[in-house]
Length: 216
Image 1: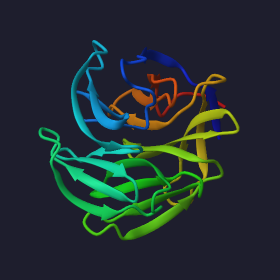
Image 2: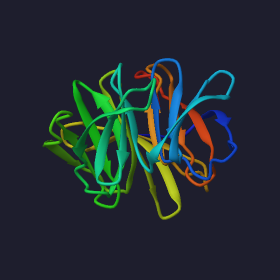
Image 3: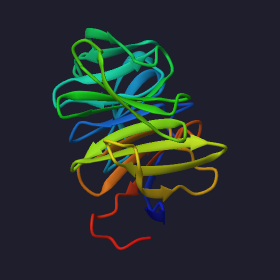
Image 4: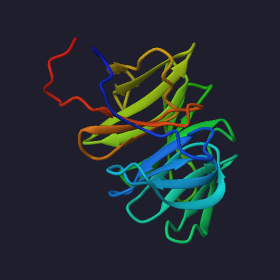
């Protein structure tokens, strides 16, 4: 397993009227983050919040190329990103204990926080297709270049880890600095991983290692 210190490229925030960051997504231009009572869209270059959608947003967020998905209690909402209109709902697999959300391969991937699990689900019905077990609390999920990454936060320590999507084996760990929580995770499709900063109200970009990086 590769292991390295996370390299923080940039911090955003804390933002006005944002007490906590709960989930993170990226629509190809803007970084969306769930802030409890709204979804905020941040320009990753300027760091400014450009848009907000008012809705219950206490956990993970995802984008499928057209729609936003938002964990809201025991449901996952499908949203029009322009208007915030709720276009549909499906049950969340953790029935309210869910903490991370990502889109990949036509399916949704959902972290279940205290169960230390990641579920792949049908985005139409919410049916669980398979489940991967982690050994730490799951606080964020993302896919990039065929790699499955998830964030953890337990015993006042956080890391971001790449795992085998079939077995859950940890292949690579990026250890966050002491006191730096990960409360949501998303890739920009390139070298950045955006991490929610929990109650700090911050968003951080860390470097995703290249596949041939020599680390141990």
